[in-house]
Image (cartoon, rainbow, N blue to C red; front, side, top):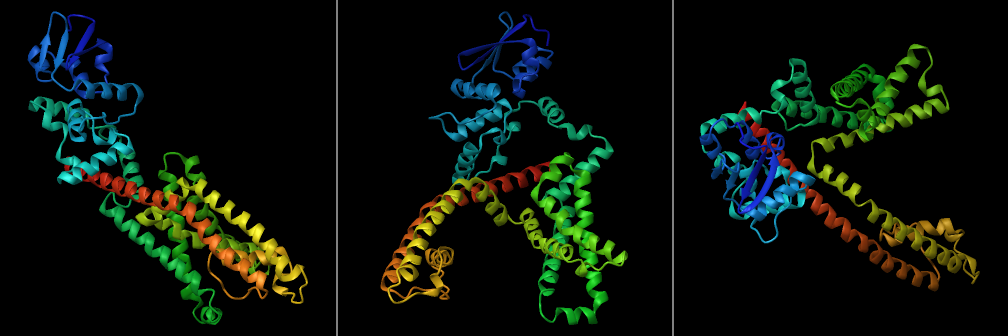
Length: 428
């Protein structure tokens, strides 16, 4: 539109905002930025409620305070609900100006999801299309919201699809099949690792050496191919190499190839002394492949997120236990062995030996391999058990609430991601 002035005024519910034409053109709110592309006053009135050409002022009969918070989001990048305004009303204002629920901070997203659940609606039931007044605007919006995916080259599209299929098991049917096969190989590898520690395994392996070798080779080949493919399609190669799970993959795969090289050179791994022991230790790192299942199970993701967020509480718990162990183990060694009251319990000959009894007593495990025999030691044992229950319960309360919060957060993320994937498939 040929604006009559270099300054454009937005009048939202009586509150006026002045912007230059350049700012209007690149404004983060889609409804406002579309004003710059309007060629006639009729097109302008399809986006706003009234227009004063003399003052170049656009009138919007919308909630002024809600738009103020939306303007704060434009400036700071943080969008929260307006105190005292219904969440659904504010969400309606967001949709009018071209924002979605994903723009809200997590705490407000949770409030909106809870409110939608109460009335039996979904955020997908409302969209910006509910506030469009013409099919021309719909087509324009469709072009603008197409995102860079439509301009990607064929190779870039292929890499993006491969990346989604590998990293997100719920992105498509091939991704689900790939994830299922990966889980099967992980379980097979874990079963083989467990069976290899059985006493009769060596005899069975000698009788069916080819079968065991084939199974191990197939599993290692799959994990190698998966690791290489994830590395090739990763956006940031250095970040990929720094991830703990990827490091575990490389460390767990490498012993197989090292053993193959040594066998080819005529040096069996079992006869290399310390090197052979190191190879067996690295081979046992395969057990950490179970952590790969975290990509497919919400419970493991919740556990990892909880541990990351509650590391302070975990450190506090360890400090509580360490202090109690130092005190009770010293007292137990003194009462059971150090005072020489006629009964010297050999199980408490040193403070480190007594610390084992303290830790199994505080955690109420009580294996029974070590126990006090003096009256003073038994009284101390009762105090140790009770104090252990209290000390462990204090930080666990915070960890429990964090676990519940993380679980609900991941559930909402998963549901929101599934809705976005469904919407993308419908658009295709």
